[in-house]
Image 1 (cartoon, chains in turn cyan, red):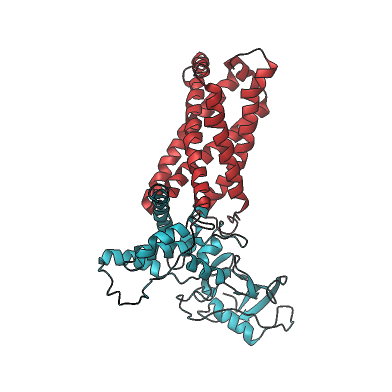
Image 2 (cartoon, rainbow over the protein chains, first blue to last red; image 1 turned 90 degrees about the vertical axis):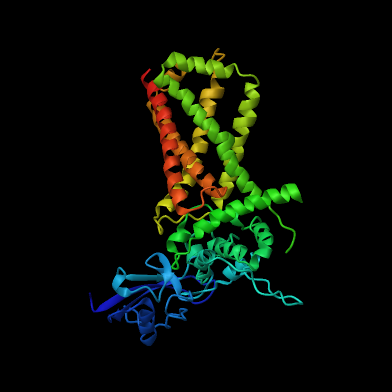
Amino acid sequence: MSSTIEVHIKRQKEAGKQPYWEKFRVPYQASMNVITILQEIQRNPVTTSGEKVAPVAWDCSCLEEVCGACTMVINGHVRQSCSALVDKLEQPIVLEPMRKFPVVRDLVVNRQRMFESLKKIQAWTAIDGTYDLGPAEKQAPQHQHELYLFARCMTCGCCVDACPQYTREGDFVGPAALGQAYLFNNNKSARFQAEERLNALMGEGGIQDCGNAQNCVRVCPKDIPLTRAIAKLNGATMAQFFKNLLFK
Amino acid sequence: MSESNSAPFLLRRFQSLLGIIPVGAFFAEHAFTNGLAFFQGMEHWDEAVAFINGLPLLLFMEIFLIGVPIILHALIGIYIWIFCETNVQHYGYFRNWLYTLQRWTGIIAIVFIGYHVYKLRIEWHYTTDLHIVNSGYVAAYFHELWHVIFYFVGISAATFHFANGLWNFGVKWGITVGERAQVISCYICTAIGVAVYVFFMASLYAFTTA
């Protein structure tokens, strides 16, 4: 292992500005991850050509791959930078902001659209009422285990970034929101809004925009069985479609 | 929640269904009939063509059960294709390749089918005295090497599109849900695709060497 690491970073001064590339070289330390590289650059923001530049901006929070804030494109693949260990990466290490979201600055992106998608499919349990709704119905542990897989979603955006159907201009809600629709439609308390979620999934940007490329399930850092949820929702939306057609 | 609008959903599922019924069903039937040229001989192929041409309301069926569904499937397909951003250069996964090839083979199939229908279904009505196309006419058509190459590419693309579309149909209609089911259905669709391909290629060989 060389004593320095070469890093190429796709930078952008602010939203809407032209992106440009800069190269940095940072001293190697054992057990480095991409976050520690960025910290080194922050400490000494000098490019390989010796030019002192503004430090690179990035997002991070938990540093243990549970918050999703530090998601970026590393050597062409979208993933969390905290769990991207330098020893396992090919060099030079190429860092880019996520591809499907508007860039705020450098590696920081605005993922508001993911939140809007969650709102579209009512990714919550409606518990507010004028009276006590009482405890939720009991559920089998197997059922709980199956649903827990989907509760691990941290809305990091890897799945939508790798999805060829999720485009900057489009309005597809994306695999993460579909996984959450599945989670809440099967939750003992949240399932009472199941029909509304299914109807929302038949509108613009709904489940029909899925093209079965299945990149989502390959890049998901939490191994959420997104394609299984999508296939189940495909059946559920179809049933809901005929229910609307024939019974309403 | 506002009034739901299920038109986008309906449009896409309609496109998916058209690809299987009637387009896919006709595609498989077409392969079977053509395969007779190789497996049973040219005279059996001519008999089969004569039988099909003797069916009642043939022109009506050709237009409304084959032509219009193919055109609608293609138009909605192009509309779907416009809005995607393929990314196999970044994510070279098996399914992502199939997804990307599904779009490209669709475009190739549109060009191929359009030319094929014009040359072997429409043109001879106006340029010859034939009432029904016969094996001699088709064999003469395949004397040109580039016709054979064009058909080889076109049939390959269309067959891939058909077999992979069949797999997609299973997922899109919520039939093949689990990972294992999707792997097994992939084998089944591959087997169906290979069978159809063998029939088409055998007939292409038979006409080329006739």
